[in-house]
Length: 165
Image (cartoon, rainbow, N blue to C red; front, side):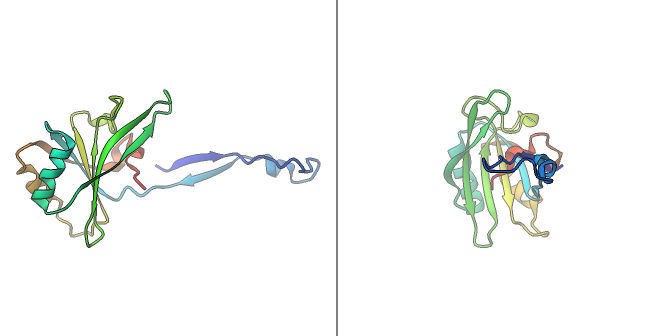
C-alpha cells in the first residue's frame, strides 16, 4: 500500500488572485510515495543485550555489525519520540545487515504486531539465490537465540517503521 503525503503550497504575497488559474492553484496536490519492501526480515527472540547478540551474530556469520545512530520514530498520536537501538554492516557484495531493537527508549514497540521478538534482522540487496533458510539455521545455533522466524514485511501494519533510507 503506498504512503500518501499531502503537500500544500503557500501563495506568494504578490500573487494575483483574480487570475483564471486561481482554482488550479488552490487545489491540493497529492504526492504518492511507494517504498519497496523487498528485503528479508527475521524476528529474533533473545534474552541478551543488543551488543551481545550482535557480537554473537558477527562471530557466527563472520561479519562486523557496528553500533550506529538509533532509529528515531515519532508517534503521530502522542508526538513522543522513541529511539530504537541499531547495528549495521554492509559486506563487499553490498548486502546490508541491520539489527534493530523492538523495544524503544520509551518502551514502545518498533513492530507492535510482533511483541514476542526482541530484535529484528533486516537484510537488503540480496539476490534471488540468497539462502534464508541456511542463514536461519546458522542463527538458531547461537546459544543466546531462543527463537527466530521469517516475517513478510508487506503484511505488517507498522511496516513504515522499517524504512531505514
